[in-house]
Every structure is written in C-alpha cells, then in structure tokens.
Length: 245
Image (cartoon, rainbow, N blue to C red; front, side):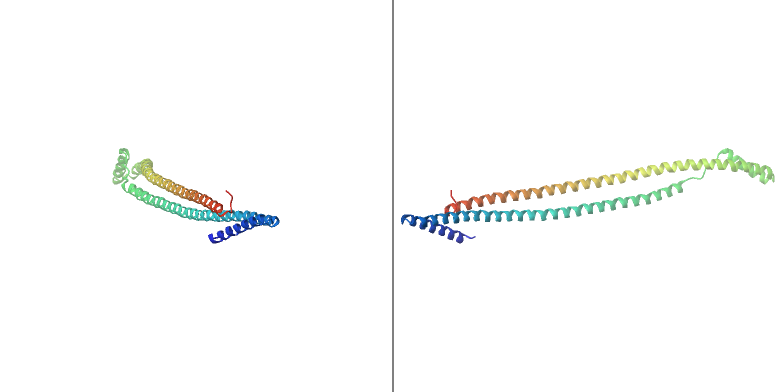
C-alpha cells in the first residue's frame, strides 16, 4: 500500500471520528456508538494489516538473503571440491610419474652394476691345478690331466658359487642404497603434496569463514534496517492516527 492509500485511510478515520463527535453533540448516541465501533474496528484492522504486511515483506527480504547465501555456499562447495579433485589428480600423476621414473632408473642402475661386474678372481690353488692340467695334457698324460681337471672343475664351481653369492650381496647392498634414496625422494614429494593439501584446506576454510561473515553482516544490517523501518512505520501510523502512542 502506497502513501496515497495510507493517507486515504487516515482521512476516512478522521471522517469517522468527526462523524462520531457530531453525533455525540447532536445527541445521536446510537449513531455515535456505531461510528465509534466502526472507527475502532477499522483502526484495529489497519494496524494489523500494516504489521502483517511489513512482517511478510521483511520475511521475503530475509528469505531472499538466505537464498542468495545458499546459492553462494553451493557455488563455494562446487568450486573448492573441484579444486581439491584437481589437486589430488595432479598429485597422483606426480607420484605415478616419479615411481615410473624410479623403476626405469633402477633398471639402468642394475644394468650398470652388471656391466661393471668383474670376472671371478681364481685362487692360486685353482690356477695351479689348471697349469698342471694343461702341462699333463701337452705331455699326453691324459689320465693324470683328467684328475687335475676334475679337481680344478670342482674347485672352480665352488669358487664361482662363492663369488656369485658375494656379488649378489654386493649388488643387493648397492640396490638397497639406491632404492632408499628413491624412497626418500618419493617421501619428500609426498610431504610437499601433503603440505599443499593442508594449505588448500586452510584456504578453503578461510574463504568459508569470510563467506559466512559476509552473510552474518548482511543479516545484521538487514535486521537493523528492518527495525528502523518498523519504527518509522509506527511513527507514521501514530501521526496518521492509526496507531496509538
């Protein structure tokens, strides 16, 4: 209802009040009673209408702010959920890439170890057996040569087994050191990722707090504005004779 309509109601109330006074002066008490009751009913109805109208308007304003806040909150969650998803995907890609690189580097490292591996260094006893075997064979003493060959073969197999075990232990030691260094590198990457994830969570929480604070401030400002509007409406109602002081 606009100010013109408000003024029309006030004018009508004023007319009723004047009519009541005239009836009272003329001794028309029945008509004066009717005018008085009509005046009170209309005044009561108008006061209620004003309050309910303003209450509805204020409720709509609060609902609008709440709806806008809800939409903003939903957008916030969608955006930050997407950021979290992209961060996790990128992090997993970095981890997978590093693991694949480590696997290739390990293969290359193992190959270099094999290439650097020296031939077995035979014992003096084994070398003597081979020399004797060769000498006997050249001298056509094949039976004796076979005996030394058997001894040499047996000793060579034993020394070769010992050498293989030693080299395997040595290679395993080098591989373990290599793998430990790569685990350290992977652990450092995971720590950086975790730190980045924590930072992302902090930024999300800080942004959420600012969003909620804006909502709180908006609602407080709206509440203050609506209180002032109610006070102004009451003053106007009093001035128009619709509301008693």
